[in-house]
Length: 169
Image (cartoon, rainbow, N blue to C red; front, side, top):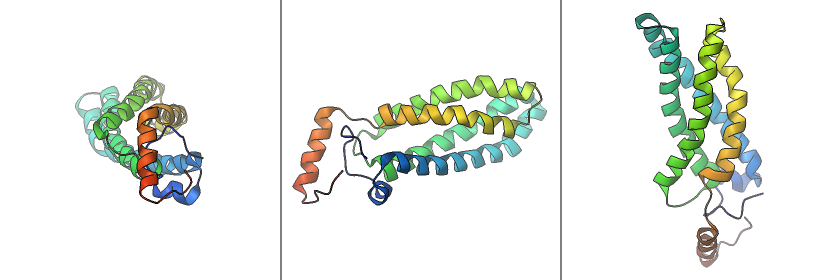
């Protein structure tokens, strides 16, 4: 099930699965796993160094910031390539994509130091916060990040039909 407001042809995963929600969840699970690995790697390096050099709060936020940058770039490429397959507007899409994640990271930046301050292990605290931020990203990316206006979607449909590849969307 695709969104008529999406411009461009379906991504390869969407052509295989035929349901954007399932494709989104599969790519999202991959992104979450890779992002969590980034978090662990930065926790063991940058976070540990900042814990010693400054304090645990700065270590938590430094870990989160570093993992965020790499995680967002990885996720953007994956969603754009395998789920939404939109054309053009790369910088606009990236800015919109990041704005969704800024909401999630703001929530994360408040909750993570609090949980760590209560004695939670930083990695387990981050894992628990993922439940909230995953829901935020689903609604934000589905309805905002890669959305195209009606005129853009219509132009993309005409372009798609003109190439003799009129497979269902």
